Image (tube, rainbow, N blue to C red; front, side, top):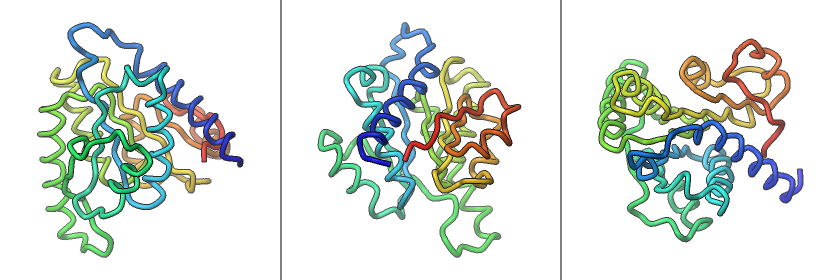
Length: 213
């Protein structure tokens, strides 16, 4: 897929996200609430970078500002990569958070690190009241999406705040663990392969716009 085609598909997907996340009343200073973009290491950041750039195009950007980028505290590369592509981003736009589980971490200790990550997520979502939580599969996103869903049910977030999950390009036949956990919560759940779209065609929140990357 050529670069121009990928850019067009990402822009088109950004418009689809825009149609969901901006069916909301912009009164009551809703525009001042941030958009949370959750980054993961490696390919996750590469994919999310393209979507973030599309959302920041002039036709969309006022709907998503201010934008905050969530990065795991053990992720040494995502911030520098995104900052090099989007020079307008400030260091203060990044929020460092505990990781739910590190590679090779025992499942017993994962219980405690996940609870700690969930507490952090609940506090940040309560504090910032994001109008949109946008993610594409890193484990860091799971506690944030659950926290956003919980606070929306409890009335801390506006009822028209949104959770949008973009399944990773590498998930051809099956959903990722993050995807399986967040499928029931996401307002829009985007898959990139026709097999997945067919498998989950009965889910109203599952959308297929073709390959994006």
